[in-house]
Length: 119
Image (cartoon, rainbow, N blue to C red; front, top):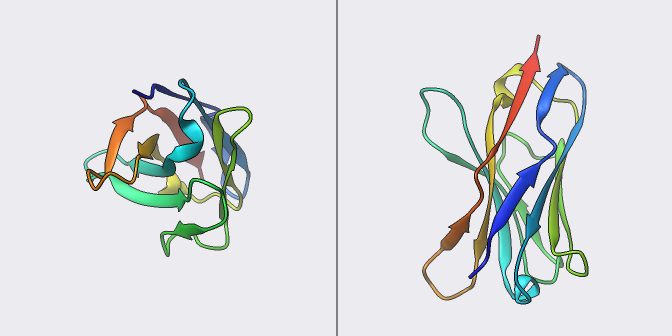
């Protein structure tokens, strides 16, 4: 079992930056790949970024590539999403999720944190 708690959301002007954090419980955090997803009002949840268990590889949605950076600190059981050059279209609830590589996909999800980017 993994419990995930996101933080760091808020209101920021376009062009600004935010860093989201996702703190995980449990001693097996370092065995999970971690992902960030987002859901804007009236839209389906979409993939944002993913990082491997070791942090050695990462993947991004085209819409955030070059602006967002995912990272993790396994000693702190935390995954981060650094968001730069924010745009109004980045406004959404951001969720972190854990994938145990079991074939079940992202089995654990946080409660989400709101990011609002004003124009």
